[in-house]
Length: 116
Length: 230
Image 1 (cartoon, rainbow over the protein chains, first blue to last red):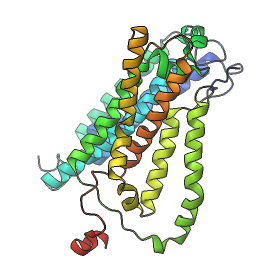
Image 2 (image 1 turned 45 degrees about the vertical axis):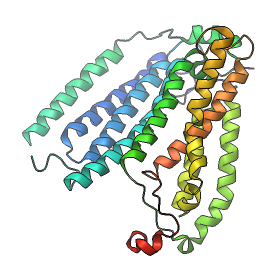
Image 3 (image 1 turned 30 degrees about the vertical axis):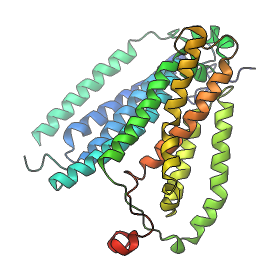
């Protein structure tokens, strides 16, 4: 017997196809919000958080589009790639935080824009 | 202030453009669902996501395990970790909780690894649980006890890459293709890779929380750097 992950967005038989679009659009909005913060915020910690929000937006778009495929089973390829992406983004965040610490130790603060 | 407005306008424009792009995609894309499910009986597992991760696109996952190792090596190269204050005597409930939760977390990680062949689960989900368990242990002020197993931890961190690469080499000798498993044995190879990857992913995620390489000073550091633990 094949047990597959049902999309958390609801039952695929009752949900209209276009219903998944709202999640993809929400992912786009998250990406834009993160993009705004990335450019506006000076503190490096906030920029890392902004990058993570952008990444979550990309994951949401991808998962939502994977849920639109016909039939009860969502497209497993986006699921696998997002799963990979989440783990990589956590590790990249850890590395970024270590880099910020080095910047802070070298420059005295973690807001490189301040003294420019 | 004006630059903020400009960035805001730019972000809104980008949001609109991307939203339009998403909206104009075909409503019922076939994607790769059909292709994934058609080959599922040959993949050795019945969970299509695991089949994609470790059979169809095993190369991606091999590189990902390598990325995880690179991340922890880079963090360890950049800085030394700081010992969290061991104030366990102030938090008696945490230790009681850890005694119950830690075995459950380890058991759940093993269960997720096993169930990944049939249902949602696998090395990444199990590894995340293991990583969370290590973070909990460190929050409990027991980082020293974890990091005392220095060589064992380092071996665990590289285990995923080594086993994955070894499986690549062996399957290449057997079938001639990179990560092309001999017919009918896919499930076993996938379980071997995932078991090693589970250990490495869990350790990487957990030790990243420590924020650096274990500093050489161990239990005698209280005498030399008392301010660290204040």
